[in-house]
Length: 409
Ligand SMILES: Cc1cc2nc3c(=O)[nH]c(=O)nc-3n(C[C@H](O)[C@H](O)[C@H](O)COP(=O)(O)OP(=O)(O)OC[C@H]3O[C@@H](n4cnc5c(N)ncnc54)[C@H](O)[C@@H]3O)c2cc1C
Image (cartoon, rainbow, N blue to C red; front, top):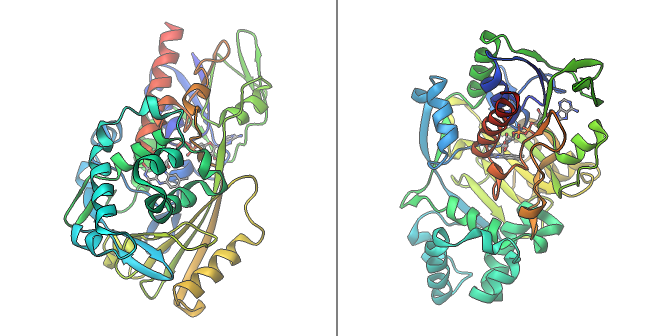
C-alpha cells in the first residue's frame, strides 16, 4: 500500500515508523526539518529545543520508544524547581518548607490545597469534563485560593479562554505535575537534547525505505480512484496529523473545528540567571507572558556555558503586534536584565500549539477515520487528552498506524 502522512511531527513520524517496512510511506512536512513542536535550534556549540520540553516518569509510550531507539543511556532524571512571581518578587515553591513559608496563602489554605493535590490522582476525570476548572476550584477551595494560585496558572496556559477550561484538564495537570520529592519534581531530559529522538526516528525511517519530504506544505487532498490524490500524487491511504480544521480545509471535508490556541515562545541566552536558580516561574502579575523557564536551572549550565531562558506565552487568534519586542522589553524590565546581557534570541510562533480543553471537549474529539481511506491523529487525539504531550503524540501515532493496518488487512 502507498500511504501519505501529512506532518512530520511526533505523531506523523511514529505512524510512519510503524507502517514503513510493510508499506510504502511518504511523509510530507512543510517545515525545513521534521520534529514539529519538538524541533530545535542549532547553535554553534549546542542544540536546544525551540520550545521547552521535559518528560514525565509515567510516559509509558515515550519511554518505551526511547528504549527502542537505543537512547536509554541518554535519558536523565533531573529536578525541576518551580516558583511564582507576584508583585515582582519570586517565591520559590519547590520544597514543602518553601511552600509552608509562602506568604500569600494562610496556613489553613495551604493545608486545604495540599489535601486537594493529594486527592487529585483519585479523581474521575470523565465526570469533570463538563465542569469548569474555575467553578470546581472555587466550590471546593474558595475564591482566594483560586485567584491567588490557580487563576495565574490557567491564564498562563489559556489566556482569555481560561474561564472555559474544564476541571478535567486542571485535575489531570495537577496529578501529572505532583510527582515530587523534597528536591522538587522529577522530570526527564535527553542529555544532548530531544533532537536525538527526532534524529534517531529519521534514521530508522530512512533505513526502512520511508520517503521524507521537507519544505512541502500540502495544499490539497482529494478522494479519487479508491485512494487520495495529495498535491497531484495518488496514495491508497492518507494520514493527516494536522488540526481537524486544517485537514478539513485541505481535504475539503466538513470536519468540525476544535478550539485551538497558538503559542509565541521567545528563547534566549543570557549572561545572568533571571530566575534565581528556579527552573519554572509562573507569573502571577499581569504580563504579556505566563511563565519564564530557565532551562539551565534544570539541565546543567556547563553544557551550554550561558543561561538558556524561554519566555512562554499563549494566544487566541493572531499573536500580538510586535510580539518579539513586547516580550523582550517586558522581560528585561521585570527581571532586570539589560539588552547587553542577552547573547541571542529567537521567536517561535506556533499557530496550532495545542487544543484549548474547554468543557465538553471530550465529545468534540473527531472520528479518527472520518472518510474512506482518510485517517486523522495528532494533538487532538484521545491519547493526548486531557494533556497534549510527547507521550500522547507518540501513542496517537502508533494507534493511527494500527487502525490503518486493520483497515487494509
Ligand atoms: C510550547 C510547548 C511546550 C511543550 N512542552 C512539552 C513538554 O515539556 N513535554 C511534553 O511531553 N510535551 C510538550 N509539548 C507537547 C508536544 O511537543 C506535542 O504534543 C508534540 O510534539 C506534538 O506532535 P504532533 O506531531 O502531534 O504535532 P506537531 O508537532 O504540531 O506536528 C505537526 C507537523 O505538521 C506540519 N504541518 C502543518 N501543516 C502542514 C501542511 N499543510 N503540510 C505539511 N506539513 C504541515 C507542521 O510543520 C508540524 O511539523 C509542548 C508543546 C508546546 C507547543
